[in-house]
Structures are given as C-alpha cells and as structure tokens.
Amino acid sequence: MLEARSAVRTLPTYHPPLGGRDGLRLDFNENTVGCSPRVLARLRELTAEELARYPEREPVEAIVADHLGVEPRELLLTNGVDEAIHLLCETFLEPEDEVLIVVPTFAMYEISAAATGARVIAVPAGENFCFPTSSLLARLTPRTRLIAVANPNNPTGAVAEPADLLEIARRAPQAAILVDEAYLEFYGQTVLPQFRSLPNLFAARTFSKAYGMAGFRVGALAGDAGQMTMVRRVSSPYNVNGVALACLPTALADEKYIQQYVEQVREGRAQLQEEFRSCGIPFWPSEANFVLARFGPLRSAFVQGMRARGILVRDRSRDYGCDGCVRITIGTSEHTGRLLVAFREVLEEIGTKEARAR
Image 1 (cartoon, rainbow, N blue to C red):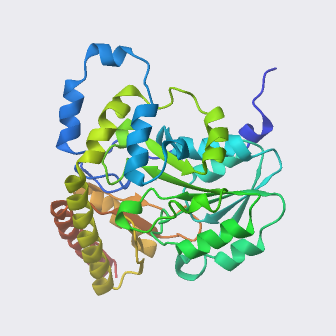
Image 2 (cartoon, rainbow, N blue to C red):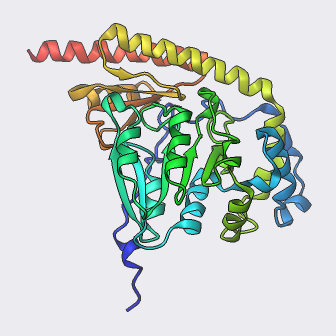
C-alpha cells in the first residue's frame, strides 16, 4: 500500500482560521485597506495575451533587487515567504540534520524543516519573549544546518539585535541562517546586505504585509550569489504567477502609499499599547504591525466580544508561552479608532458580567 514518508505522516499541521472572516480583519496582520490604488489600476490593464503567457520572473527580480539594494543574482522571487522557507529546507537539509527555531514563532519553519526528515529543536524565548542568543548558541552542534529567525517575531513582535544574528551566522558557518523580515517596514533594521561577508546568511521579505498584496502570494529571498544559485535549482521557473509579477513593480514605485500606511500603523501601535497600559493588561512592546497581550481567563470572552462588534482578533493561546494571549493587528488610523472604541466596550461588558456573577 502506498504511504507518505514517515516525516510527512508525523508533521504538525497549520490550519489558519480563514473561514468566516467578515468585518474588520485584525487577525492575520494584513494591510487593513489593501494594496496601492495604482496596483488596482495595473490589474485592470492586464490583457488576455499577458495572462496567456508563462510568467517571466527575471525582469521583475532585477527591479526588486535594485529596490532592496542587492544584485539580481543575489535575489529570488518566491511564492510568498512560505516558499522561501521551503526552498531553503530543500536545498540544505538532509534527514537527521538539526534545525533551530526560537519559540513561539511562525509555524512554517517547523513544518517545512520537519518534512525533510530533519530534527527540529525548539529553543524557548527568554524572559518577556526576548531573543535567547546565548541559549541558541549553546544548542549549536556540527549537525546544525538551519536556524530560522523571524525578525520582528510573530506572534510576539519582539526583535533580535542585528549584531546577535550576525554573530550566530559567524558561529555556525555550516548552517543556513534565515532572517525572516516579513515585518521589516514597521521595524526598520535589516541584515541586508551582510550576506556578502557571511555567505550562510539569508534574508526573506514579503509583500503581503505593508504592501497589502497577500492575495498575490509574492515574496523574496536574498543571499550570497553562489548559495542562491543552489536555491534556484530547486525552485520552479514559474513559481510566481504572472499577475503578481505584472503588479509588483507598480507597488514598489508607490513609496508614498507605503510610507503613509506604515506611519499610521506605528501611531496606532503606540495608541494600543498605551490603552493596554492604562487598563492594566500585560502586553509585549512590538516592532511589527500587531501587539500581543495577555487577557488570561478573559481571552475567550474578549475575542467573542470583538467579533460581535465586527472586529476579528487572533487567539494565540496555543503558541508556546502564550496561554491566555490575543494578538491584534494594527491598521489605518480609522481602523485603530474603531478598534479602541470596541476594545473599551468589550472590557466594560466583560466587567459588568463579572460583577453580576459575583
């Protein structure tokens, strides 16, 4: 009887709750208003002939590389960061190799690595979810072949100092060091182009967050040109669809749109954190477009109360160290205003119900 490989049969699964997402979606860290209007205009210009062609990735890679300050041969466009993770695992991991991840973090690091038969070692984050540089270095062995770090991290919003990431890359030359910079626009510090002196260092970017293009599924992986040659060998030549390739240069060109959105997110992030502070709700300072807070036993009532008001937030209680936690995405100033009004209403409602119960 045909059976999947043992590594696949035992894989953890990742099922994001995508169904029934009506209302203000503050649960998936998406841009809350979507892509630049210029991108929509470019979409409307697409012809049947353009859609009939196989997508040509290289010309757009040259544009993206120039935007990021790297050479085209140092960059590969991917089907979201998910594919970038997958390609690194396929390129560098053998069964029984070791992979280090800092938990809690994005689930696809573990899933893509474990699918190769590699052994995934979870290193717990430090106090207040700080990056555990010393603990991670202590887990290095000759079998360590991949270290994946989201910076800023999801779901905590915490960051690792670039100097620490570079030190890890220096201390583990036999391992691919992936720095996932999906939330870079809200943070501002990157390891690009440090891979020119550290050929085992890779940086991933996405256009799903600040750029509002999650539905296009397009990301980028950058690294040493020689290493990227190997990564390209396991990539499909048509991995990024033609619609995404046609629209991405337009999105990059509208820098004002991205700047305005990022500014609103940063202002809203400060407002929400101040709201948590004034209400006595524990939270973790974030450098991303979301904030994680601990509601404890009120978590379920809070999530349901927000949904009843047309606002979706993400329950992260199942993540390591996140019992009772909820993650809330920050969007435009208007959406932050709606969020704060509903937030206060729900807390008041929960407080009233608790008082009655007593």
